[in-house]
Length: 151
Image (cartoon, rainbow, N blue to C red; front, side):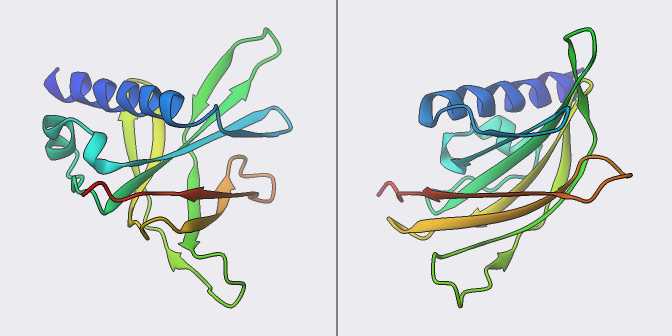
């Protein structure tokens, strides 16, 4: 019961933080919505971070990726997916550091999360491959975000 509550709190916290920090970020790929957001881990409540083994630090951030399938009746359902990706600077010769994703569940809503080190006041490039449909090529999602270390 406690695990489910904390997972729900984490998911809700990430959605609220994402909503306040940035506009809704997602890519539409056919009938799939690939949602993504990255937030500083210091914004997570201590208990939630501890329960999910997420390091809270002003120099660390968390990337959250989830996929919703749009159904014919207008509803959506969350899907379990696989995500691979890198994070790096804007320099084209920088291959980026690999992100290590793991699954977090909030009820029936799985999401993939990865923690990474922030480069203070530098734009960071995210290149993701999201396996949203096992019968299709992975969707490629890329975005750039700037983070600040609160000292």
